Image (cartoon, rainbow, N blue to C red; front, side, top):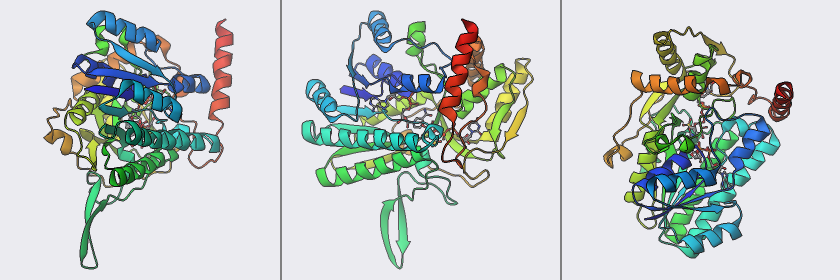
Length: 404
Ligand code: NAD
Ligand code: USQ
C-alpha cells in the first residue's frame, strides 16, 4: 500500500511510519515540525535525544534499504496538502498531525484557538483532499478515548443503540470531552461522519487511550532512530511522567484523589493497531470507530505500580496527591468496550513488571537530561490565562545562561 503518515515526526507517527515501512508498504511522512517548536516555546525537551527528521530517515534507509518519502509542510495549508496528494497518491492516509496536549490547549485563549484551528482545519483539509484527488483513499484518523469523558454507563465503540419513546436508533455515543484539545477531536469526528455520509468516503476513527513507552522493534535498531519520551507537565503523559519522576526521587504527581481511570496502551500496540486498520479498510461511506487501548487503570493504580517497581530497584518514592489542576471527576465509574481491534488480531503487550522495569530503565539511561522543574503542573483549567509559556521560557533562558 501507499501510506501517507501525517505527523510522522511525532511520537506515535514516527513509530508507525517505521513499522509500516518495515512491513513493506510505500511510506511518506508529512510534518511541519510544530511539535519541535512547541518544545522551544515551553522550554522543555524530550527525555530521549531525538535526531532531525532527515537524519532519522537517512539512517533508516541505510539500515534497511527502505526509503521513506518526506513532505515538509502544514496539513492546515490546502495548497500544500493538495500537491502532496497529487504527487504521492496515497491508498491510505494515517492522520496523527494535530496539537495533542490537553494542558497546552488550556494555557489561554490563544492556545485554545490555535489547537482547534490547527486540528479542525487540518482534518477538514484532509477530507476535502481525499474527495478531490483520491476518493477511494482510506482515512485512518487518531481520535481519543477522551472524547467520551467519564459517563456513568459503559462506553461503546463509537455508536450506541438508544431506545426513546418506543423507537430505537444507532446513534453516535454522547461526547463529554474534558479540554479544548479533546473538544477538537469531537469536532473532527463529526466532520468525518458527515463527509463519509455525503461523499461516500471511507474512514476509521481510532479513539486511542493514553500511550506509554518509547521503544519499538524498529526504533531500537539504532540510537539515531530513537523516539520521543515526553515527561513535562504539558506534553508528558502520566505513566511516562511517573517513571521519570521515580528515577529522580521526585514524589509522583497524582492529581487529586487519583481515581481518574483511563484506557492505556503500549506504543508497540499503537503501531500494530494502525497496521490492522490499514489492512482492513472501512467500506465506502462508512465512518467506523475503534476504541484503541488494551487495559484500563486509575492514576493511583499506576502510581502504586511505579512505586513498587522503584522499590525493586532500591529507590524510595513517595506518592503525592496534588490539588487537581484539571476539572475532571477524581473518582468515577469506567468501563469502555475495546474488542474491535482484538477481533482483527491485535495481541496486546500488557503492562507487567518487566515492561515497567524497561520503562524505568529508559528513564535511568537518560537521567542526566531530566529537568525536574517541569514535574509540577503549571496549567490550571480554572484560569483563562495561565502564564505557562512565559514563565517556562524565562526559566529555560536562565538555565542556559547559568550553564554558559
Ligand atoms: P506528537 O505531538 O508527538 O506528534 C504530532 C506530530 O504532528 C508532530 O510531529 C507535529 O509536528 C505534527 N503536526 C501537528 N500539526 C501539524 C500540522 N498542522 N501540519 C503538519 N504536521 C503537524 O503527538 P503524538 O503523541 O504522536 O499523537 C499523535 C496523534 O495521536 C494525535 O492526533 C493525538 O491526538 C493522538 N493521540 C495520542 C495519544 C498519546 O498518548 N500520545 C493518545 C491518544 C491519541
Ligand atoms: N495526571 C496525573 N498526574 C500527572 C499527569 C496526569 O494525575 O502528572 C492525570 C490527569 O489529570 C488525567 C490522567 O492522568 O486524569 C491522564 O492525563 P495525561 O496527561 O496522561 O493524558 P491526557 O491529558 O488525557 O492526554 C493524553 C494525550 C492525548 C490523548 C489522551 C488519551 O496527550 O493526546 O488524546 O491521552 S485519553 O486520556 O484517553 O483521552
